[in-house]
Amino acid sequence: MLDRTALILSIIGAINWGSIGLFQFDLVAWLFGGQDNVISRIIYVIVGLAGLWCISLLFRERSAISDGEEHL
Image (tube, rainbow, N blue to C red):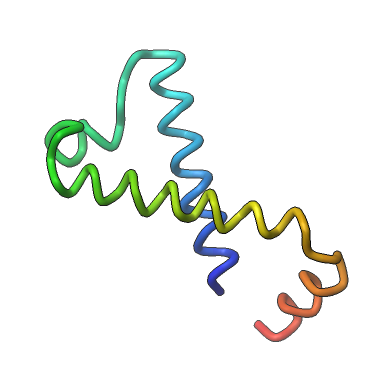
């Protein structure tokens, strides 16, 4: 469950970075009142932590990842 949540948050972060790069539009800042808003900063930190968690997926064996999905 944590792996999927982290992956979803990382995808949201990637979409936000893509919108910044392509359109100079920060979706998180727009939704939550600017980059300096406390809520926006919390979202940025949570997405960053999710990205760090996803690094662990690179070093897991394929069978360990597959076994976790079968229990859903």
